[in-house]
Image 1 (cartoon, one colour):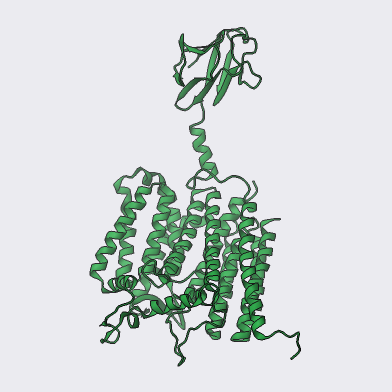
Image 2 (image 1 turned 45 degrees about the horizontal axis):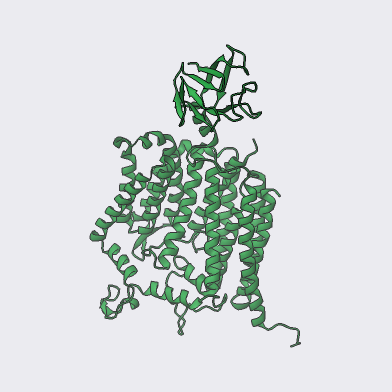
Length: 160
Length: 429
């Protein structure tokens, strides 16, 4: 037997190591590819498929709240402002309801949320405060149709 | 890379693992192993081509995982008995053929199966009760699991599992809303299923399959309704039923005694030969020898072909080593490091199956994928847990690895189902 020839035991040892290295390599390969195969985020529900979940969401779709402008320097009096889902009222450029001309409003003054359980308003720490029917908003509260919201010098009335 | 190219790459790595294992068997035991390896590689290449043509968007990890599991099973069986290895290789060929046929038949829309749900339900019950018919059923090792069809031994319970999942996926999708409301009258059919599970235990003495099928039912009920209370109530019912059966059936009592007290210091009555024997030499002989086998493997294993499975006079130490106890053979020769890798393969398979269920778009597909995956996971847990003495041991096969034709075919059907659901979920919109 030549010096280079492997003994049977050496061959078996090499095969055993190759087996284990390849086996764990295989597991790593499969686990890593798992993250690549799956584009998109997992869905919120295991019971409902994406179309079914979308149908349910449509059923409970975020309501749209409509306000009429009673007064205010930044908006045309008598015009309508619509809020779908959520919007920030303020002078800032990213505000959903922009009242740029109102000197007494903060950049991010208040947030209006239209949800299936009602229209909610929340003061975002504004300098001059947010008022509903003359009462200052201290915590997030729900609005009834006809309520008048005052932000700075702007007054908005919630429609049905 | 597309899922199919990743699948091909993973199949090559799996072929490398199988090659290393089968080369060892070729050197140590039999030259037949090399031939089985060649057949095996060609076979999965064909399966890959079929998958590429029929379900191009399906998950790319499952087929290589199944390939590697069958390779490990085939290696171990060939090492124990080269002739059985040949039979197992033949069954893997049949399994892959059934897999390919299922993909080709159902490639357009597998959801037509939903309209046959009650047919599947009836078929599942008939298959489960078939072995208890005296004419064709056969009792092996205390449990009636087998049916003789000509020269073939068939284990109908394995196929019943797939049919039951198809039935439950269709039925629960239809009744999901009313079940979630929790009115008592809607639970009639579900109580009937519980009754059937208990009946199967009494009729066939097959605890493993009753536990498996009832577990699948509870998991799918939870997936469909999202109510943990139902699972708790169902588990309670099963526990109460099992407690009653424990009192009533000696077979069940013996299984629990073997599980809790496999060793005795004194000789106790042995039902097998009617004498007084230590329990480790009688009722729990099989389990105890299997535990010794696992312990003998240690961390690194003895190496394939070097394990001890026969006593010095050549008799086999562990009965049913190729089927129920194949895990302890693998754990001895591959050691903790290899057995842990095998369990990791199962875990990755289950994780991918559940991801498929999450991504599926309709209720039937979700329930089907979740049920198939959970059944696969629970079956693995029941048999590995039984061999490791975590739960009472019940004879059931280790998916894709154990020796047994029906089991291989049923698991390839399961794999085809998961790939079909996955293909539909990933289909580009």
